[in-house]
Length: 513
Image 1 (cartoon, rainbow, N blue to C red):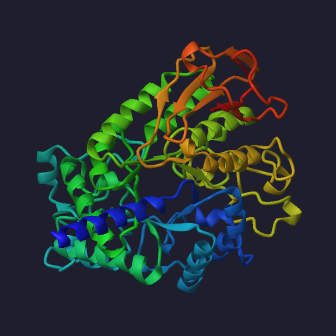
Image 2 (image 1 turned 180 degrees about the vertical axis):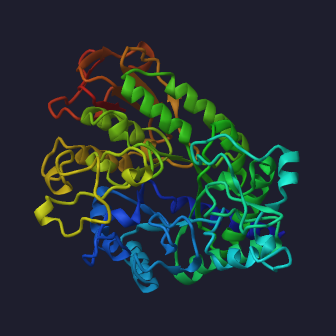
């Protein structure tokens, strides 16, 4: 009995520790574009280390770095060596120093772990394509053209995460089998029915968690770890993966990229404690652009119900865009006020917000992908030693974006919207809760206004967003007049409510307790 009680206490302690360390605000860095430390024009690991104080001052708790493993591409999502740092970005010593310096500032490092596929130049694939008898053949998915046709899987429809419609490819002229590559022929998918491959991947993960010291993983293409016709196997795989990872590092942080509708994301929470909420991100974009609510809170609550049915302690990783999506600045055609509204929604709704680098200065970007990943603008061109130059930007240029250095001096800049609201969010338990998101509908029904309640045992807060660029004055509904204390507003002169009336600044947010 004593042993059982000790076990229960230990597991509870581990769970509490893991929850304590759950990052509140995360930041995605496209490494090549963020900060250059050596003047070669390419963003690198030491460049990120040099900017840690900036990121800490912004209020960031965790950094998701896009892949840094050795790879032939600029984006590094086609890995050729899972245990080497690409020379473009630095060395393993640089990476370990980044982790050490980040930890000194209580910032966690999340590795982008690309295990759905490798590069076709990876040693495993170079061996596998030699023939059916090669010991690495089973590391990948191979079928004959006849079998592919009989299963009806020769082609697929485009999806948000892959525009490939012909996912089967011959490795060599005259082959009798094709290999499966969901994203393109240069990224062959791995075969997780192969126990040797699973062990390889788990050993690689252990290397990064134990020897290198990362805090967790962002799991690329988590929905596609098995091909679409074997989707049910994905859920079981991620449950096993999580068990293996927590055995190595009990407080490991894991977030999945499952790019699909919320109802199909839900089962992944059985294994993955956090998943990106793509539907919510697109919904925020829509209401910001249209400047009117579209039942956002009802939709989010319905998604929470689905997520919670699979894992009551789910973490809702929220975004307004990322390195694969049109930047919010371009979605709203460069309208700074609309960008501010999007930021305010992201940072006041429940969940664990992810900020894509440059959103805090209003960067722009549309497809093709390179233009979603343009250089961060730190300073005026003549004074910007950190700015990368690996590409010529099309959207985020000196003519379109005020550099960070100037925005830091301007209290009305979008940068200060992010910085001030992150700081405020962290001081309010009702806003900073991540696990088991707390959200309740408001009865405010004014056109162009979105209200919601964040519930908490320390006291609920009422959040009211003005989605329009016109100031509004609204009277609180009778059942929400208990919210009497104004605790946040972008209008300094507004200190309190008068006659239950709230003055909403244009494109602003007011928070009451």
